[in-house]
Image (tube, rainbow over all chains, first blue to last red; front, side):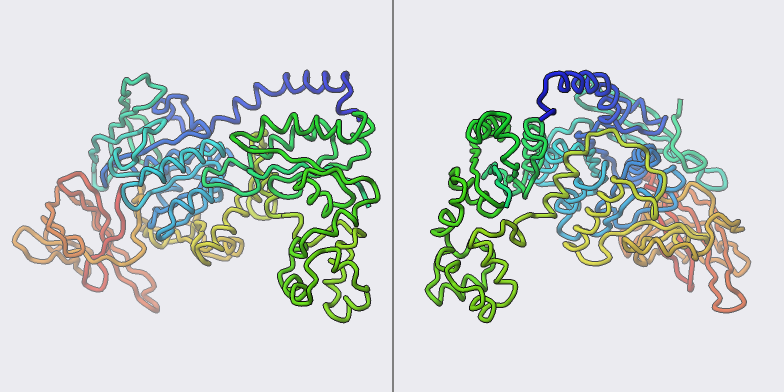
Length: 220
Length: 364
């Protein structure tokens, strides 16, 4: 019964204490690509939190949602995209998403919440686009489950009120304007961060989403 | 047969809508392993520990069981109870836990005798026995082995041995699916090395993702879960496709996406590609339809765009067209792409093909 012998336990506890802080701190945060670091309160995606990405069509909400997957997927974390019925796979590759780590459920039909909850068991980040305004109970259940499973839930909605409960972080795309020069070159967007980590004060950031080569860049 | 102490948490045997049961049970399991290293989960909410070692260490089976219940109780959460029992073999020990009984050594067959035949987890056998008036395990156990074999077959013979207390393992007693899940929950916060490969060299994380994808595919149907595949081509819709989960391993023979494709549309690419054809009307200032000539020139600059017979929207700017004439040697495909910027800031990619315009992408 050496697991209970005092000397053994002390040594194990000592070892655990020496290992744990470093490991768990890094394990709780998933990286995001450099230009997006300033958007998020932790400078990264915190496991167990819900991030709402809100923007009218054309403002770049889809691009921002996909861009949030880039560094996590490149670091070997599995991601899923639920309800994006027509994902621009080439755009994802240009943004820098590691497509080998992304599972798509393009048309979950009536079962987007079920599909999202099921994916919480297997992946680290779920980007979900609900078909309409989310029901209160469904949102609460998904947020609780994401917290329990240590998964990041990225909810992609047209308007921030479409996600009916307060999210840990809300990224709202307020304006977008394209720069064209013989072709569409880049889109300058303003992103407003509202969330628990910003102590109520919204933070504004400018992004090129996408930038000239398709990747996201900060716009000074 | 090994004598086992079984811990049963009735509130954790089923996963609720909040899904916290596996995590709570994993905490109990970890605590039990700290107490007795050979503690093993049986199914969600049930774990078994060989009684011999811990009983000697803690000075008696009941003392150990009290210790176990003491650490598990606060971890169950809510109004959940913790039940502990012991008997020979997993089957009898599970029932003993349900009844919170410590069956004395050698008394397992007597203990089993009054339990219902339904506890053997075979509805057909149970129904047949009920019809014969054999309602309890004791009555079933009293049958001769040869009679059981000729009347019910070999599978029932195994259950007969269990009912007699000679065997402790019953098919379905251990829930392997739940155990794999539990394993995933327990090891989720451990720091993981970055996985190098995809198919072929799979890490624990890949297996976990594969398991979730398979479960989802069972629920939603084949083809509902897909992965992306990049391939060669010029337009965004040729350059990638979504293929059902599990088929990507054969993608190596596909067109090479890294090869140069002259005439390829420039980056950035649209973040949404319509999977079905959506017709678009592109009109000039005078209301005439905009066409692309055989030399790849627009008949007039577009001024308005109607998406799927919706209301017309003003075009603020356009870029292109990029004409493509492919496979002229065989099944010729001529098309031209045009980037259109609407006055509300929405940018679209449209395609002229078969003398019509189609939506090819949305820059969202």
